[in-house]
Length: 480
Ligand code: NAD
Image (cartoon, rainbow, N blue to C red; front, side, top):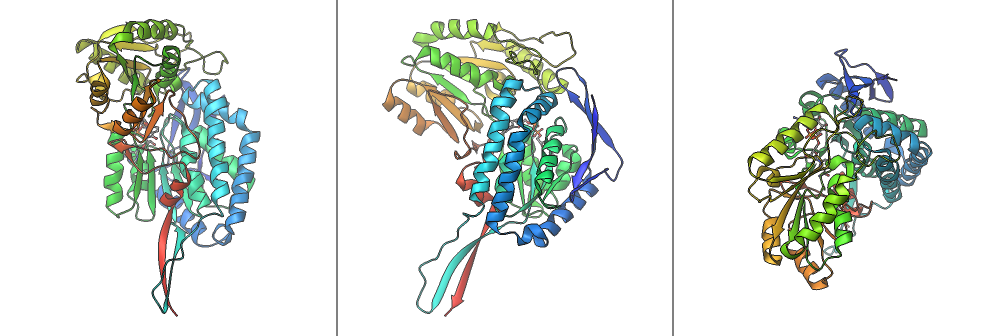
Protein backbone atom coordinates (compact mmCIF):
# COMPACT_ATOMS: atom_id res chain seq x y z
CA UNK A 1 0.00 0.00 0.00
CA UNK A 2 1.37 3.41 -0.94
CA UNK A 3 1.37 6.11 1.73
CA UNK A 4 1.97 9.85 1.61
CA UNK A 5 4.74 11.54 3.56
CA UNK A 6 5.36 15.16 4.41
CA UNK A 7 8.38 17.19 5.41
CA UNK A 8 9.26 17.15 9.10
CA UNK A 9 10.08 20.68 10.23
CA UNK A 10 9.98 22.08 13.77
CA UNK A 11 8.19 18.98 15.04
CA UNK A 12 5.39 19.31 12.50
CA UNK A 13 4.52 17.37 9.37
CA UNK A 14 4.17 19.97 6.65
CA UNK A 15 3.60 20.17 2.91
CA UNK A 16 6.44 21.64 0.88
CA UNK A 17 6.02 25.33 0.09
CA UNK A 18 6.01 24.57 -3.62
CA UNK A 19 3.28 21.94 -3.12
CA UNK A 20 5.38 19.53 -5.19
CA UNK A 21 5.65 15.84 -4.41
CA UNK A 22 7.68 12.95 -5.81
CA UNK A 23 7.22 9.20 -5.91
CA UNK A 24 9.46 6.80 -4.07
CA UNK A 25 9.52 3.44 -5.84
CA UNK A 26 9.88 -0.05 -4.45
CA UNK A 27 12.90 -1.36 -6.38
CA UNK A 28 11.67 -4.95 -6.18
CA UNK A 29 8.52 -4.13 -8.13
CA UNK A 30 9.05 -0.74 -9.73
CA UNK A 31 5.74 0.28 -8.13
CA UNK A 32 5.13 3.34 -5.99
CA UNK A 33 6.12 2.80 -2.38
CA UNK A 34 5.08 6.24 -1.19
CA UNK A 35 4.40 9.80 -2.32
CA UNK A 36 6.66 12.28 -0.61
CA UNK A 37 6.56 16.07 -0.27
CA UNK A 38 9.44 17.51 -2.27
CA UNK A 39 11.44 20.01 -0.28
CA UNK A 40 13.18 22.91 -2.00
CA UNK A 41 15.35 25.83 -0.97
CA UNK A 42 12.62 27.66 0.97
CA UNK A 43 11.76 24.54 2.95
CA UNK A 44 15.42 24.02 3.77
CA UNK A 45 15.55 27.60 4.97
CA UNK A 46 12.59 27.02 7.31
CA UNK A 47 14.13 23.81 8.61
CA UNK A 48 17.43 25.54 9.35
CA UNK A 49 15.62 28.36 11.18
CA UNK A 50 13.72 25.79 13.27
CA UNK A 51 16.95 23.95 14.04
CA UNK A 52 18.65 27.24 15.03
CA UNK A 53 15.78 28.16 17.33
CA UNK A 54 15.88 24.73 19.00
CA UNK A 55 19.66 25.00 19.39
CA UNK A 56 19.58 28.42 21.00
CA UNK A 57 16.49 28.30 23.21
CA UNK A 58 13.95 25.91 24.60
CA UNK A 59 14.20 22.48 26.19
CA UNK A 60 17.06 21.13 24.05
CA UNK A 61 19.30 24.12 24.66
CA UNK A 62 18.69 23.91 28.42
CA UNK A 63 18.96 20.15 28.74
CA UNK A 64 21.71 18.66 30.90
CA UNK A 65 24.01 16.36 28.88
CA UNK A 66 23.01 13.33 30.97
CA UNK A 67 19.32 14.04 30.25
CA UNK A 68 20.16 14.34 26.57
CA UNK A 69 21.81 10.93 26.74
CA UNK A 70 18.79 9.52 28.56
CA UNK A 71 16.46 10.86 25.88
CA UNK A 72 18.59 9.36 23.10
CA UNK A 73 18.58 6.03 24.96
CA UNK A 74 14.81 6.24 25.22
CA UNK A 75 14.64 6.73 21.45
CA UNK A 76 16.96 3.73 21.05
CA UNK A 77 14.63 1.57 23.12
CA UNK A 78 11.70 2.63 20.97
CA UNK A 79 13.73 1.83 17.86
CA UNK A 80 14.49 -1.67 19.23
CA UNK A 81 10.78 -2.20 19.84
CA UNK A 82 10.04 -1.28 16.24
CA UNK A 83 13.19 -2.81 14.74
CA UNK A 84 11.41 -5.50 12.71
CA UNK A 85 9.00 -2.93 11.31
CA UNK A 86 11.87 -0.59 10.37
CA UNK A 87 13.75 -3.48 8.74
CA UNK A 88 10.77 -4.14 6.51
CA UNK A 89 10.29 -0.46 5.67
CA UNK A 90 13.97 -0.16 4.76
CA UNK A 91 13.88 -3.32 2.63
CA UNK A 92 10.87 -1.99 0.71
CA UNK A 93 12.52 1.40 0.39
CA UNK A 94 15.87 0.30 -1.05
CA UNK A 95 15.65 -3.43 -1.78
CA UNK A 96 18.11 -4.74 0.82
CA UNK A 97 17.33 -8.38 1.67
CA UNK A 98 15.33 -8.57 4.89
CA UNK A 99 18.07 -10.59 6.58
CA UNK A 100 20.52 -7.77 5.91
CA UNK A 101 18.24 -5.04 7.28
CA UNK A 102 16.97 -7.14 10.19
CA UNK A 103 20.29 -8.53 11.37
CA UNK A 104 22.79 -5.92 10.18
CA UNK A 105 21.56 -2.47 9.10
CA UNK A 106 18.94 -1.86 11.80
CA UNK A 107 20.79 -3.36 14.80
CA UNK A 108 23.99 -1.53 13.81
CA UNK A 109 22.02 1.70 13.46
CA UNK A 110 20.49 1.41 16.94
CA UNK A 111 23.79 0.35 18.48
CA UNK A 112 25.33 3.55 17.11
CA UNK A 113 22.62 5.60 18.82
CA UNK A 114 23.25 3.82 22.13
CA UNK A 115 26.99 4.31 21.77
CA UNK A 116 26.65 8.09 21.38
CA UNK A 117 23.85 8.37 23.96
CA UNK A 118 26.46 7.05 26.40
CA UNK A 119 28.93 9.75 25.32
CA UNK A 120 26.52 12.68 25.76
CA UNK A 121 27.77 13.39 29.29
CA UNK A 122 31.41 12.51 28.59
CA UNK A 123 32.37 15.45 26.40
CA UNK A 124 35.45 16.91 28.07
CA UNK A 125 37.72 19.89 27.63
CA UNK A 126 41.20 20.20 29.15
CA UNK A 127 42.76 22.12 31.98
CA UNK A 128 46.03 23.36 30.50
CA UNK A 129 49.38 24.16 32.03
CA UNK A 130 49.00 27.89 32.65
CA UNK A 131 51.58 30.63 33.11
CA UNK A 132 51.75 32.31 36.53
CA UNK A 133 48.79 34.59 37.19
CA UNK A 134 46.68 33.04 34.41
CA UNK A 135 44.24 30.15 34.18
CA UNK A 136 43.90 28.49 30.78
CA UNK A 137 41.39 25.79 29.85
CA UNK A 138 39.31 24.48 26.96
CA UNK A 139 35.59 23.89 26.51
CA UNK A 140 34.09 21.49 23.98
CA UNK A 141 30.93 23.11 22.67
CA UNK A 142 28.37 21.92 20.14
CA UNK A 143 28.74 23.47 16.68
CA UNK A 144 25.10 24.46 16.23
CA UNK A 145 23.02 23.37 13.24
CA UNK A 146 24.28 20.35 11.32
CA UNK A 147 23.28 19.71 7.71
CA UNK A 148 23.30 15.99 6.90
CA UNK A 149 23.02 14.67 3.35
CA UNK A 150 22.77 10.89 3.02
CA UNK A 151 22.69 8.29 0.23
CA UNK A 152 20.26 5.48 -0.51
CA UNK A 153 22.27 2.34 0.19
CA UNK A 154 21.84 2.29 4.00
CA UNK A 155 19.52 5.23 4.64
CA UNK A 156 18.90 4.62 8.34
CA UNK A 157 22.36 3.48 9.32
CA UNK A 158 24.20 6.27 7.51
CA UNK A 159 21.79 8.88 8.84
CA UNK A 160 22.39 7.63 12.37
CA UNK A 161 26.16 7.89 11.93
CA UNK A 162 25.59 11.66 11.78
CA UNK A 163 22.43 12.15 13.82
CA UNK A 164 23.61 10.32 16.95
CA UNK A 165 26.96 12.08 17.56
CA UNK A 166 25.48 15.42 16.47
CA UNK A 167 22.66 15.20 19.01
CA UNK A 168 24.79 13.67 21.75
CA UNK A 169 27.06 16.71 21.51
CA UNK A 170 24.05 19.05 21.79
CA UNK A 171 23.63 20.13 18.16
CA UNK A 172 20.42 20.19 16.13
CA UNK A 173 20.13 18.80 12.63
CA UNK A 174 18.52 19.10 9.20
CA UNK A 175 18.59 15.83 7.25
CA UNK A 176 18.26 15.57 3.47
CA UNK A 177 17.56 11.90 2.59
CA UNK A 178 18.36 10.50 -0.84
CA UNK A 179 15.47 11.00 -3.27
CA UNK A 180 15.34 7.22 -3.87
CA UNK A 181 14.87 6.33 -0.19
CA UNK A 182 13.25 8.97 2.01
CA UNK A 183 10.64 6.75 3.65
CA UNK A 184 12.53 4.77 6.28
CA UNK A 185 14.13 7.98 7.58
CA UNK A 186 10.72 9.67 7.90
CA UNK A 187 9.43 6.58 9.75
CA UNK A 188 12.43 6.68 12.08
CA UNK A 189 11.87 10.34 12.88
CA UNK A 190 8.31 9.55 14.00
CA UNK A 191 9.87 7.27 16.61
CA UNK A 192 12.23 10.00 17.84
CA UNK A 193 9.25 12.32 18.14
CA UNK A 194 7.29 9.75 20.14
CA UNK A 195 10.31 9.34 22.41
CA UNK A 196 10.06 13.07 23.23
CA UNK A 197 12.79 14.74 21.17
CA UNK A 198 11.92 18.47 21.33
CA UNK A 199 10.55 20.27 18.27
CA UNK A 200 13.15 21.56 15.84
CA UNK A 201 15.98 19.32 17.06
CA UNK A 202 15.58 16.92 14.12
CA UNK A 203 14.23 18.19 10.81
CA UNK A 204 13.91 16.16 7.63
CA UNK A 205 13.57 17.73 4.19
CA UNK A 206 13.29 15.06 1.48
CA UNK A 207 14.00 16.28 -2.02
CA UNK A 208 16.50 16.21 -4.83
CA UNK A 209 20.21 16.81 -4.61
CA UNK A 210 20.36 19.77 -6.97
CA UNK A 211 17.55 21.53 -5.08
CA UNK A 212 17.22 20.65 -1.39
CA UNK A 213 20.74 19.18 -1.22
CA UNK A 214 22.40 22.20 -2.78
CA UNK A 215 20.29 24.59 -0.71
CA UNK A 216 21.41 22.85 2.48
CA UNK A 217 25.10 22.68 1.67
CA UNK A 218 25.31 26.28 0.46
CA UNK A 219 23.19 27.77 3.27
CA UNK A 220 24.92 30.31 5.52
CA UNK A 221 22.77 29.18 8.47
CA UNK A 222 24.37 25.77 8.97
CA UNK A 223 27.51 25.22 11.04
CA UNK A 224 28.71 22.05 9.34
CA UNK A 225 27.75 19.73 6.53
CA UNK A 226 28.13 15.98 6.98
CA UNK A 227 27.87 14.10 3.71
CA UNK A 228 27.89 10.49 2.58
CA UNK A 229 27.60 9.81 -1.13
CA UNK A 230 29.55 9.77 -4.35
CA UNK A 231 32.92 11.41 -4.84
CA UNK A 232 31.56 13.65 -7.61
CA UNK A 233 28.76 14.98 -5.37
CA UNK A 234 31.24 15.33 -2.51
CA UNK A 235 33.23 17.78 -4.63
CA UNK A 236 30.08 19.83 -5.36
CA UNK A 237 29.20 19.90 -1.67
CA UNK A 238 32.66 21.06 -0.73
CA UNK A 239 32.40 23.87 -3.27
CA UNK A 240 28.95 24.87 -2.01
CA UNK A 241 30.06 24.84 1.64
CA UNK A 242 33.15 26.86 0.78
CA UNK A 243 30.95 29.87 -0.13
CA UNK A 244 30.31 30.33 3.59
CA UNK A 245 33.48 28.56 4.73
CA UNK A 246 31.51 25.83 6.49
CA UNK A 247 33.35 22.70 7.64
CA UNK A 248 32.55 19.48 5.80
CA UNK A 249 33.07 15.81 6.46
CA UNK A 250 32.90 13.61 3.39
CA UNK A 251 32.38 9.84 3.30
CA UNK A 252 32.67 9.11 -0.40
CA UNK A 253 33.14 6.28 -2.86
CA UNK A 254 35.48 3.33 -2.83
CA UNK A 255 37.06 0.69 -5.04
CA UNK A 256 38.43 -1.58 -2.35
CA UNK A 257 41.16 -4.11 -3.09
CA UNK A 258 40.76 -7.51 -1.47
CA UNK A 259 44.02 -9.46 -1.72
CA UNK A 260 44.21 -13.25 -1.46
CA UNK A 261 47.72 -14.61 -0.82
CA UNK A 262 48.67 -18.21 -1.56
CA UNK A 263 49.02 -19.01 2.16
CA UNK A 264 45.45 -17.90 2.96
CA UNK A 265 42.70 -20.18 4.19
CA UNK A 266 41.02 -20.34 0.78
CA UNK A 267 37.58 -21.28 2.01
CA UNK A 268 37.47 -18.35 4.43
CA UNK A 269 38.84 -16.05 1.73
CA UNK A 270 36.17 -17.16 -0.75
CA UNK A 271 33.37 -16.69 1.77
CA UNK A 272 34.69 -13.31 2.90
CA UNK A 273 35.17 -12.13 -0.66
CA UNK A 274 31.62 -13.18 -1.57
CA UNK A 275 30.28 -11.13 1.33
CA UNK A 276 32.66 -8.32 0.35
CA UNK A 277 31.17 -7.94 -3.11
CA UNK A 278 27.59 -9.24 -2.95
CA UNK A 279 26.44 -7.86 0.42
CA UNK A 280 23.70 -5.29 -0.27
CA UNK A 281 23.87 -6.13 -4.00
CA UNK A 282 27.34 -4.59 -4.13
CA UNK A 283 25.92 -1.17 -3.26
CA UNK A 284 28.43 -0.62 -0.49
CA UNK A 285 31.14 2.02 -0.43
CA UNK A 286 33.41 -0.47 1.36
CA UNK A 287 32.63 -3.21 -1.18
CA UNK A 288 35.60 -5.44 -2.10
CA UNK A 289 35.05 -4.92 -5.80
CA UNK A 290 38.64 -5.72 -6.87
CA UNK A 291 39.82 -9.15 -5.80
CA UNK A 292 43.55 -9.76 -6.32
CA UNK A 293 44.51 -13.44 -6.37
CA UNK A 294 48.07 -14.77 -6.23
CA UNK A 295 49.02 -16.80 -9.33
CA UNK A 296 49.60 -20.17 -7.65
CA UNK A 297 46.12 -20.39 -6.08
CA UNK A 298 44.24 -18.59 -8.83
CA UNK A 299 42.38 -21.62 -10.25
CA UNK A 300 41.45 -23.04 -6.84
CA UNK A 301 40.11 -19.70 -5.68
CA UNK A 302 38.15 -19.06 -8.86
CA UNK A 303 36.61 -22.56 -8.97
CA UNK A 304 35.31 -22.24 -5.46
CA UNK A 305 34.19 -18.60 -5.78
CA UNK A 306 32.29 -19.12 -9.03
CA UNK A 307 30.63 -22.32 -7.78
CA UNK A 308 29.31 -20.46 -4.74
CA UNK A 309 28.38 -17.27 -6.58
CA UNK A 310 26.21 -19.27 -8.98
CA UNK A 311 24.14 -20.48 -6.02
CA UNK A 312 23.29 -17.01 -4.68
CA UNK A 313 19.54 -16.65 -4.43
CA UNK A 314 18.40 -13.41 -6.06
CA UNK A 315 14.79 -12.35 -5.56
CA UNK A 316 12.14 -10.79 -3.36
CA UNK A 317 14.00 -8.89 -0.62
CA UNK A 318 11.24 -9.62 1.88
CA UNK A 319 11.77 -13.38 1.69
CA UNK A 320 13.98 -14.83 4.41
CA UNK A 321 15.95 -16.99 1.99
CA UNK A 322 16.85 -14.19 -0.43
CA UNK A 323 20.54 -13.38 -0.54
CA UNK A 324 20.47 -10.58 -3.12
CA UNK A 325 17.60 -8.17 -3.74
CA UNK A 326 17.19 -5.58 -6.51
CA UNK A 327 19.48 -2.67 -7.24
CA UNK A 328 18.01 0.54 -5.90
CA UNK A 329 16.78 2.05 -9.18
CA UNK A 330 16.52 1.63 -12.92
CA UNK A 331 19.21 4.28 -13.28
CA UNK A 332 21.56 2.22 -11.14
CA UNK A 333 20.71 -0.95 -13.10
CA UNK A 334 21.56 0.80 -16.35
CA UNK A 335 24.76 2.16 -14.86
CA UNK A 336 25.84 -1.41 -14.02
CA UNK A 337 25.01 -2.53 -17.55
CA UNK A 338 27.14 0.27 -18.90
CA UNK A 339 30.11 -0.99 -16.84
CA UNK A 340 29.57 -4.59 -17.94
CA UNK A 341 29.65 -3.42 -21.56
CA UNK A 342 32.86 -1.47 -20.87
CA UNK A 343 34.44 -4.56 -19.30
CA UNK A 344 33.64 -6.68 -22.36
CA UNK A 345 34.78 -4.00 -24.75
CA UNK A 346 38.10 -3.54 -22.97
CA UNK A 347 38.84 -7.29 -23.07
CA UNK A 348 37.89 -8.66 -19.65
CA UNK A 349 36.46 -12.16 -19.56
CA UNK A 350 32.90 -12.42 -18.23
CA UNK A 351 32.81 -15.60 -16.12
CA UNK A 352 29.27 -15.40 -14.75
CA UNK A 353 26.33 -12.97 -14.73
CA UNK A 354 26.51 -9.68 -16.56
CA UNK A 355 22.78 -9.44 -17.18
CA UNK A 356 19.49 -8.52 -15.56
CA UNK A 357 17.87 -11.15 -13.39
CA UNK A 358 14.29 -11.79 -14.51
CA UNK A 359 11.49 -12.05 -11.94
CA UNK A 360 7.73 -11.95 -12.34
CA UNK A 361 7.84 -8.32 -11.14
CA UNK A 362 9.46 -5.40 -12.93
CA UNK A 363 12.15 -5.00 -10.30
CA UNK A 364 15.70 -3.82 -10.86
CA UNK A 365 17.46 -7.15 -10.35
CA UNK A 366 20.94 -7.99 -11.59
CA UNK A 367 22.84 -11.26 -11.55
CA UNK A 368 25.97 -11.80 -9.43
CA UNK A 369 28.75 -11.02 -11.88
CA UNK A 370 32.43 -11.97 -12.09
CA UNK A 371 34.98 -10.66 -14.58
CA UNK A 372 38.46 -12.18 -14.83
CA UNK A 373 41.54 -11.27 -16.86
CA UNK A 374 40.97 -7.76 -15.60
CA UNK A 375 43.90 -5.36 -15.70
CA UNK A 376 44.26 -2.24 -13.61
CA UNK A 377 43.91 0.11 -16.54
CA UNK A 378 40.38 -1.10 -17.36
CA UNK A 379 37.36 1.04 -16.48
CA UNK A 380 35.87 -1.76 -14.35
CA UNK A 381 39.06 -1.86 -12.27
CA UNK A 382 39.15 1.88 -11.71
CA UNK A 383 35.60 3.22 -11.43
CA UNK A 384 33.14 2.53 -8.67
CA UNK A 385 30.33 0.40 -10.15
CA UNK A 386 28.22 0.16 -6.98
CA UNK A 387 26.71 -3.14 -8.05
CA UNK A 388 27.35 -6.92 -7.81
CA UNK A 389 30.21 -6.85 -10.31
CA UNK A 390 33.55 -8.30 -9.24
CA UNK A 391 36.82 -7.67 -11.07
CA UNK A 392 39.39 -10.41 -10.48
CA UNK A 393 43.03 -9.49 -11.06
CA UNK A 394 46.08 -11.77 -10.77
CA UNK A 395 49.23 -10.84 -8.89
CA UNK A 396 52.73 -12.27 -8.54
CA UNK A 397 54.06 -11.27 -5.13
CA UNK A 398 53.57 -8.85 -2.26
CA UNK A 399 55.14 -5.92 -4.07
CA UNK A 400 53.00 -6.49 -7.16
CA UNK A 401 49.85 -6.80 -5.02
CA UNK A 402 50.52 -3.60 -3.13
CA UNK A 403 51.30 -1.62 -6.27
CA UNK A 404 48.11 -2.76 -8.00
CA UNK A 405 45.94 -2.40 -4.89
CA UNK A 406 47.01 1.21 -4.32
CA UNK A 407 46.66 2.13 -7.99
CA UNK A 408 43.27 3.81 -7.50
CA UNK A 409 41.83 7.23 -6.78
CA UNK A 410 40.04 5.78 -3.78
CA UNK A 411 41.22 4.81 -0.31
CA UNK A 412 38.28 3.78 1.84
CA UNK A 413 38.74 0.13 2.80
CA UNK A 414 40.93 -2.79 1.77
CA UNK A 415 41.25 -6.44 2.70
CA UNK A 416 43.90 -9.13 2.73
CA UNK A 417 43.95 -12.83 3.41
CA UNK A 418 47.12 -14.53 4.63
CA UNK A 419 48.21 -16.79 7.48
CA UNK A 420 51.58 -15.00 7.62
CA UNK A 421 51.53 -12.49 10.45
CA UNK A 422 54.55 -10.52 9.28
CA UNK A 423 53.20 -10.21 5.76
CA UNK A 424 49.83 -9.10 7.13
CA UNK A 425 51.43 -6.25 9.05
CA UNK A 426 53.67 -5.23 6.15
CA UNK A 427 50.59 -5.03 3.93
CA UNK A 428 48.56 -3.12 6.54
CA UNK A 429 51.32 -0.52 6.58
CA UNK A 430 51.49 -0.27 2.80
CA UNK A 431 47.78 -0.14 1.95
CA UNK A 432 46.41 3.38 1.54
CA UNK A 433 42.98 3.12 3.11
CA UNK A 434 40.97 4.26 6.11
CA UNK A 435 40.27 0.65 7.15
CA UNK A 436 42.16 -2.60 6.50
CA UNK A 437 40.49 -5.96 7.08
CA UNK A 438 42.83 -8.91 7.74
CA UNK A 439 41.24 -12.34 7.14
CA UNK A 440 37.77 -10.79 7.25
CA UNK A 441 35.83 -8.17 5.29
CA UNK A 442 33.26 -5.39 5.79
CA UNK A 443 33.30 -5.34 9.58
CA UNK A 444 31.69 -2.42 11.41
CA UNK A 445 31.45 -1.40 15.01
CA UNK A 446 30.10 1.73 16.65
CA UNK A 447 33.46 2.18 18.41
CA UNK A 448 35.59 1.73 15.27
CA UNK A 449 36.29 4.91 13.25
CA UNK A 450 35.25 4.70 9.61
CA UNK A 451 36.24 6.96 6.75
CA UNK A 452 38.46 7.44 3.75
CA UNK A 453 41.73 8.71 2.42
CA UNK A 454 42.44 10.05 -1.08
CA UNK A 455 39.21 10.65 -3.05
CA UNK A 456 37.19 8.54 -0.61
CA UNK A 457 36.91 11.66 1.51
CA UNK A 458 38.01 12.87 4.91
CA UNK A 459 36.82 12.84 8.48
CA UNK A 460 36.02 9.75 10.52
CA UNK A 461 32.53 8.70 11.50
CA UNK A 462 31.83 6.33 14.38
CA UNK A 463 34.06 5.92 17.41
CA UNK A 464 34.77 8.43 20.12
CA UNK A 465 36.69 10.63 17.65
CA UNK A 466 33.51 11.43 15.72
CA UNK A 467 32.43 13.63 18.63
CA UNK A 468 35.25 15.97 17.57
CA UNK A 469 33.48 16.49 14.24
CA UNK A 470 30.40 17.79 16.07
CA UNK A 471 32.08 19.98 18.68
CA UNK A 472 34.19 23.11 18.61
CA UNK A 473 37.07 23.70 21.02
CA UNK A 474 36.93 27.01 22.85
CA UNK A 475 40.07 28.11 24.66
CA UNK A 476 39.48 30.26 27.77
CA UNK A 477 42.08 32.51 29.44
CA UNK A 478 41.39 33.92 32.88
CA UNK A 479 43.55 36.57 34.52
CA UNK A 480 43.83 35.60 38.18
P1 NAD B 1 25.00 10.70 -4.63
O1 NAD B 1 26.25 11.45 -4.38
O2 NAD B 1 24.39 10.74 -5.96
O3 NAD B 1 23.86 11.17 -3.62
C1 NAD B 1 24.04 11.21 -2.24
C2 NAD B 1 23.20 12.31 -1.66
O4 NAD B 1 23.65 13.55 -2.16
C3 NAD B 1 21.72 12.21 -2.01
O5 NAD B 1 20.97 12.60 -0.89
C4 NAD B 1 21.58 13.24 -3.11
O6 NAD B 1 20.29 13.77 -3.23
C5 NAD B 1 22.55 14.29 -2.65
N1 NAD B 1 23.03 15.17 -3.71
C6 NAD B 1 23.18 14.90 -5.04
N2 NAD B 1 23.64 15.99 -5.70
C7 NAD B 1 23.79 16.97 -4.77
C8 NAD B 1 24.24 18.31 -4.82
N3 NAD B 1 24.63 18.88 -5.95
N4 NAD B 1 24.28 19.02 -3.68
C9 NAD B 1 23.91 18.46 -2.51
N5 NAD B 1 23.46 17.20 -2.41
C10 NAD B 1 23.40 16.45 -3.51
O7 NAD B 1 25.35 9.24 -4.16
P2 NAD B 1 24.39 7.99 -4.20
O8 NAD B 1 24.33 7.50 -5.60
O9 NAD B 1 23.12 8.29 -3.49
O10 NAD B 1 25.20 6.97 -3.28
C11 NAD B 1 26.17 6.18 -3.76
C12 NAD B 1 27.53 6.76 -3.44
O11 NAD B 1 27.69 6.95 -2.05
C13 NAD B 1 28.64 5.81 -3.83
O12 NAD B 1 29.65 6.52 -4.48
C14 NAD B 1 29.14 5.27 -2.51
O13 NAD B 1 30.45 4.83 -2.50
C15 NAD B 1 28.93 6.42 -1.60
N6 NAD B 1 28.84 5.95 -0.22
C16 NAD B 1 29.87 6.20 0.63
C17 NAD B 1 29.85 5.75 1.93
C18 NAD B 1 30.97 6.01 2.88
O14 NAD B 1 30.78 5.89 4.07
N7 NAD B 1 32.14 6.38 2.39
C19 NAD B 1 28.75 5.04 2.38
C20 NAD B 1 27.70 4.80 1.49
C21 NAD B 1 27.76 5.27 0.20
